[in-house]
Image (cartoon, helix red, strand yellow):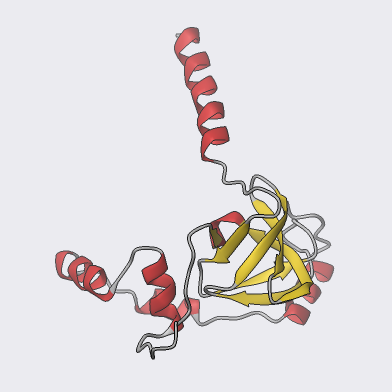
Length: 160
């Protein structure tokens, strides 16, 4: 029994190391989500320093196991930490000269391999699911000032 537990523990550690996304310093990466906030640190409560959008070209400054420090290619003074899951090494073209009839939401989903056809197929095979509350929650936003007040009033620290 001890051998099995040790084996599973070692396997979990190895799998974590293999699947932990990291990027090489100086590498070009692209934003693979609709939008993301760049922060001045890796902690949950770090201050926002800027915002990036789907397809923005970034350069890796420093890579971590969960977050990567990047700078915007078009504005090297804008740099901050972003979750690794919001980045991809696959080149994303925003729109090459031709017009695109898709929202930024649709483009972000397509970048993740999800299309209108995939959504339609999922809905038809799961017709009893209702996503109205999910849509409602996704519309909630919290300002930087509100978050700062919450952190101060709750005496929260760190957040990593």
